[in-house]
Amino acid sequence: MEVFEGADFVRLLSVRPGGAGRPLYVHADEDGRSVRLDPRRAFYNSVWAVQRRVSHAAASSSGAGGTLYVLLRGAYGRYLGGPDATPTACGCFPFPCPCLCCCPCRAAAQRDFDQPDVPAIQWRAVATGGAHVLLHDAAGRYLRADCPRCLRSGVSVSACASLGTAVQWTVEVVPRRRSNGRPELPIARDVSSSIVSSPVFPRFRHRHPSFLR
Image (cartoon, rainbow, N blue to C red; front, side, top):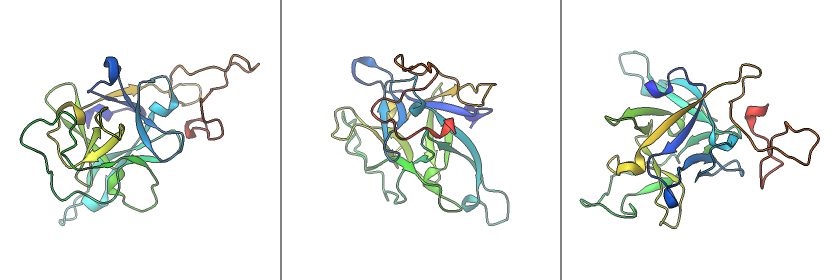
C-alpha cells in the first residue's frame, strides 16, 4: 500500500501501452457509470481521489481490525470497482493468449458506495517486485486493462493475476493545490469565454466533476 501513502489524488497508468505506444490511463467516463482507458492525462476524468478504509468484512474472528484498503472516487462522485459477482475459477490457458480473452473477466464501472461494506470497490496494492503494482480488490479480483484488439477495449476485473502487463499499473500521485484543495493538473481552457479559468469538459458539459464542488 506504500504507493498510496500520503496520496490524496492519483492516476492509474496501465503498464501495457495502447496503440502507437500511447500511455493509457483509467478514466471515469462522462456517463457517470462506465470506465475506460484513455491517453489524455490532463483531464479530471483521469484523477481518482484516495479514501482509506478498514474493511470490517475482512476482520478476523479474533476481533482484530480488518484489512486496510483504499477507495478510489472518480470525478463524478462514484467509486472504481467491478460487479459483485466473482468468477469461481481463473480459467487461464497454460500458454500466452495474444488477446487475453481466455481469462474470464467482468467490466469495471463507477459504483455507488451504498452499503456499509462493498468489497468490489475496496483496493489494495500488491507489489510485483518492480516499480509497478497489481490492484487487488476485496472480492479477490485484479484490475485489468483490456486488450485493444478485443471487442470491449476498456477496464475490467479478473480473478487471474498471471496476465502480465495487463494487470500491472503505475500509480501516479497528483499533488493537491494549496489554494482550494483540488487536484493540481493542467486543464483545457475555453478560449472563447471571458472567464479563462473555466474548465472545459468536451462532449459532456452538463455533469460537473465532484472535485469542483
